[in-house]
Image 1 (tube, rainbow, N blue to C red):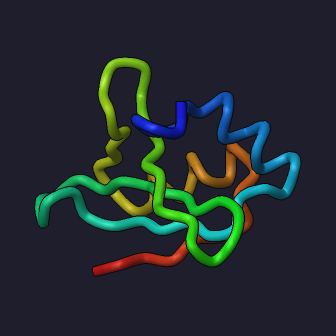
Image 2 (cartoon, rainbow, N blue to C red; image 1 turned 90 degrees about the horizontal axis):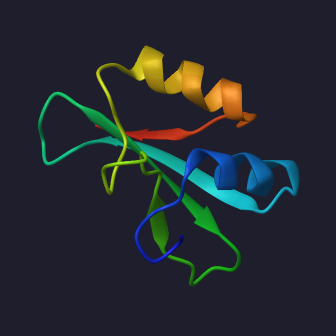
Length: 82
């Protein structure tokens, strides 16, 4: 789960448990697509990408689409890296 990325259903559960510390949205490899990563736990925690069922990282075509997904899973906000 966390070694490769985190699936949407697990993310929903972590959000409900208030276990998600930070969320970051950034372009994938400088391209047009966006990815969402979360940080759990203490200060030394690493970023874990949200993944799709088939890919190691789920991507979105726009920040608006990421925002809709984040709202749908219960995230209250995220930082954007341009």
